[in-house]
Image (cartoon, rainbow, N blue to C red; front, side, top):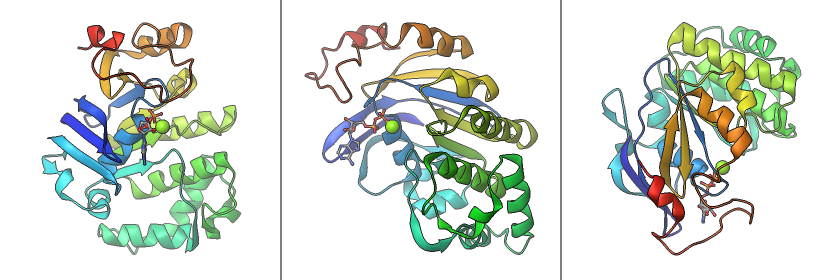
Length: 259
Ligand code: ADP
Ligand code: MG
């Protein structure tokens, strides 16, 4: 994506984001609460209510911004959102069948693949026939999303805080599952996370720091280690006052750090 600017509810949240994820690469996006990380994920997926003001997003040369959300998914984009939606009345198995049919890969042994995926990430099989995400714990929803990724085999996956709600063992299984996809199939990953823990198994090629809608720092995996000890103080005003702290535009101390 290039020069991406986007607004929510009339307010500009993303203020010029450049980012390129190649096949097989893992990119981590970190940053304070309210910096626009989830907005970035929603804009890439084309969620209604997010208005693109400028810039481009392409996948293998295809202009994603011209496509409806389902067309983006058919083009190979997958997302695991921070707060997965509960969909009463739709079973996971049916949803996956339909999604595979939509990309011309229906008719296979979806049930078998779901069972194998469930086993790999320690997801209880009895959840497979339940309505999508209904009555699942936070961690179970995240495993559910990872299972979908394993079955759908996208080319790019956006993971928004997939680590939240997962216990240590589940986190390891999920991170390893995604890492395996990057190695075996060349999946490209954009992983939004607050914690280095996820990135121990899902090893990032690049770590980006997003602050107030701009990428203000980039580095290798060591940047995530550094942030774990220093926080974002060096890149932005303290997040300690709570999320979404406002400042008049353009005078934030992080502007001097922008690259
Ligand atoms: P992050 O994921 O980095 O914590 P978000 O992308 O969720 O941050 O939010 C960035 C900013 O956009 C916040 O100030 C948030 O309040 C605002 N925002 C996000 N979604 C909406 C919405 N639907 N309506 C109004 N404001 C929103
Ligand atoms: Mg978020």
